Length: 451
Image 1 (cartoon, rainbow, N blue to C red):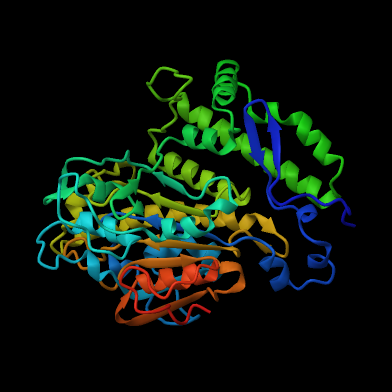
Image 2: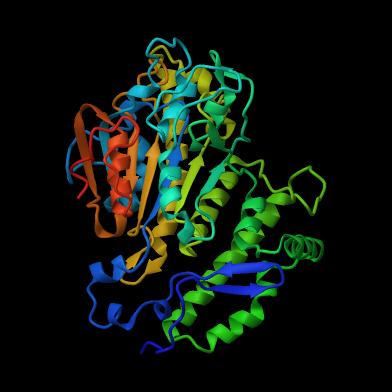
């Protein structure tokens, strides 16, 4: 039986320099949501989250695109790792980003791909300080809803951001290395260090106290949980059985993530620095999964409802020797129809999808009422380049995961008419979180057939 004690939705466990946001608990829901409520009604009681995940250099589309339409589609080789979340997934074919095309500006498709992905706008060709593209959809949403959470949005990446220099045929590096744009000339750099993201999520409001508690934790290898145990014990005494179990699971997950970050730091060569701890793993898969876990934790605790994640910057020439790919990713993306190079591109694509599947499985494992965190999310995964050799910006590789709080019907492959703007997807997502807009970027209206 549920405890009648009511807990505010925005609740924290507090300690010295620490504010640990709580996950969604039954004690936070009005009793009417739990007594005879339908699954849809219970799901609607929870906030909707949005995340945008960018992959570089396009994809090998023959291994990406399902052959059948509707619910009967089979996952092609690249998407096979998503088997466990197939029913939570929409494969969206036919979408385009016209503003990533040259339109008289010549080369620079990789820079335009990254710049246009979340903005639907044409980037000004410049390598100077006069950069200009447009407000990204995550920041458009954050401007409307950001005051409802501790952080309006969360920007993550695996490549350190750059804002100056020429990175692609006369385009500033700011375009290639940043997804989120607060204004048409202000990119928001992504945080790449898992330790710093963790500290940001669980720090209190006093900067001096935060620094002191962080230094103590690192020096004596104490957990962030050590600082909130007293508060946690008091809370446990007021919770029902289900909520006590859920809180235990959540605190265990926080500690396990802490330990993984600590293990990753043991293999860095940077000396300890309490003001800016090192924590970027050298292992790529470990880095990706830590960042995905941090994003999931931020959503679970309602610390933010909006996130973006740049797996690698467009034009990235990272090699993947552990996959048997010693050449740089960008280099082999110019495959000239060489089947050996295309096979290697497909390996990289499948590897990235495998890490994405890990993230979705995590969201699906977190219960929220009668549903899951994934049911209450909308997660876009893709690129603004389709084939890396032709640099085409139509028929893009795009996935949409999650149920949008019951407003999306996943488990399908949907093909849209040629040149349907990807910005139409963003208009539809904004509507589902309560942000009404008739137009975003180069949109022509909301995207049909999501529900």
